[in-house]
Length: 571
Image 1 (tube, rainbow, N blue to C red):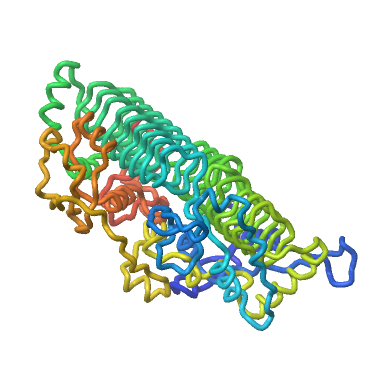
Image 2: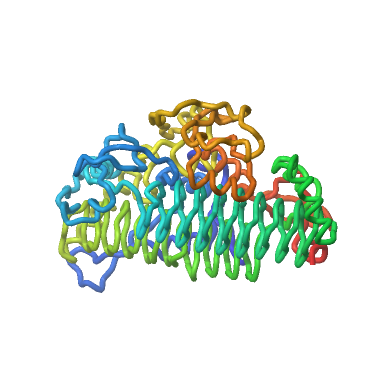
């Protein structure tokens, strides 16, 4: 960042890589450090409990937060309150109490009844884990759903299946991060679009298939970095074009004749190779910013080592912050703003002045809490709603709360726990169940060696008439019989079986698309690989040869331009 000075270079205690602590970092840690009344003093006489610099590098801190979030792995199990069959992100062998969503939000139970007294003879995280094991957990995190039981972290979804971290959409299947859209199949990061298939990063588009990084495109297939294009096929870096094939213009009649010939044998793998050799990549996807550093940053100021940031300011080491989020480090949210937060993961709505929080919203002035809703001034709490001045799920007066919290923090300082986020060892999930494995993929042996947990649970697959190897499927959708719905397909990569559902088959037939040959989980991983990793590299512009920071590794083959060269070439 501009005007920052490196004060200390530390060695990450997890990966041993070096990372810097700057004067601005220290200012931030000081600003968000909590203050409490000194013993036997006036309310206004506050003593600050300092947050020291982190012991992990930014990447390891992000990885540690991510192991607390399972978005996509769904299981069948029993509701521990009613005994009915439910869908849950917690596999049935896990030692947690899990309630179906409606039951969890009901008044049939009260999380405050699971309170504990803090034991100053035991470590903090040991006691926190005991609370995690006792307080009932909600099966899924959804709201305002209609016929969308197999979704998670979604709201206002209708007639959707296996959709995650999405909102305000209908008729979507096997997709993630969909907003205000409908008929989205096998896609990620889609906004205000319809009839989208196998796409990544698409906005304001209609009937677009096998495409990436496109805006306001219509009736097109195999596009990359195209904008306001209609009836185009196999095109890259185009703007305001119609009837183009491989960036060559055709008459309307010749266009449709040509793509009917191409469509039979063309594939996404062929197009990906074409992109690598011919497309011009902009060094970073940044627009209307001041002093920003990383990728996918828009209309923001003073953003460092952060990804997917909108309309925000003074943010470092964070992801997915929106709507005027300010002055926060090591945070992840979605849509709603946050302010003065540190080491917090997954806010759905507004958050202010929080430390070491996971999946809480809205919440303010709180520390070390997991899945608490509409709360403020709580500490070491789990699954509370509408609570204030609680410690370990126990209700206190304001005065009692402010006296006890600093005592617990002093204890945490002695046990070297105070300035750390929740350890992965007490996460409810195995590494392979979480989003950490999408951004920082590890094999089982690697994960265990790094002290992460690993889930070995395999759910029972539904009974089917027959399992068909993917390579035995007809390529033409017209040759697929109706009874494919009663069969399973063996994934060509993982060999895991998967089923085709009726809504999905109708879409393939309507759009003349082949049946997929890979399991939905593998298809999601394939799409994630199309997006750049959350790492920065030193690389030279392939046009003017100036030095630049980019998420394109210098070992990759793509043609990457600096912003000036890209603008001149494309526009």
